[in-house]
Image 1 (tube, rainbow, N blue to C red):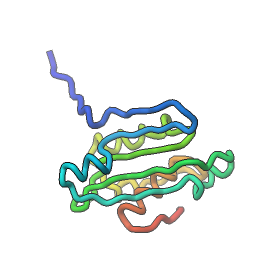
Image 2: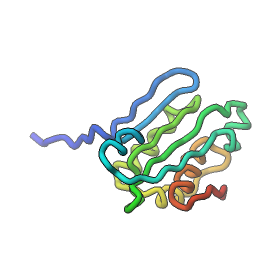
Image 3: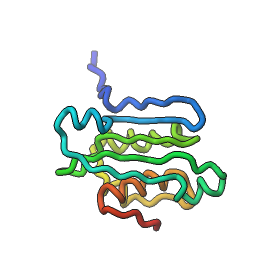
Image 4: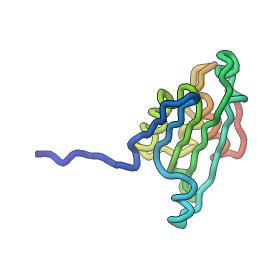
Length: 131
């Protein structure tokens, strides 16, 4: 038959605690060990309107991107809904999206996934702007 396409780097991991912890791709430590120059964007849920509305502001979204190409290399989420949120990052990484690509995607407001957009804005532009 047909060889399946599977990039083990893009398989999401979730720890079902409260808050949940979810990640896909590389960690900062792995990128440093591999000698990869990377940028980082970290957006706290304390600054997210939906998290404030449901009174669950613990955690953050952190994105790691290639410093030269802006391609997403890793996404890490700590939040009560992290396991539900990680899939957008998996899809983006599967198709080679950059943090700028993700920063330009319109997200409904208020939603928790706006934190992913904010982290991508920070990695790509150095600032997060809600729009």
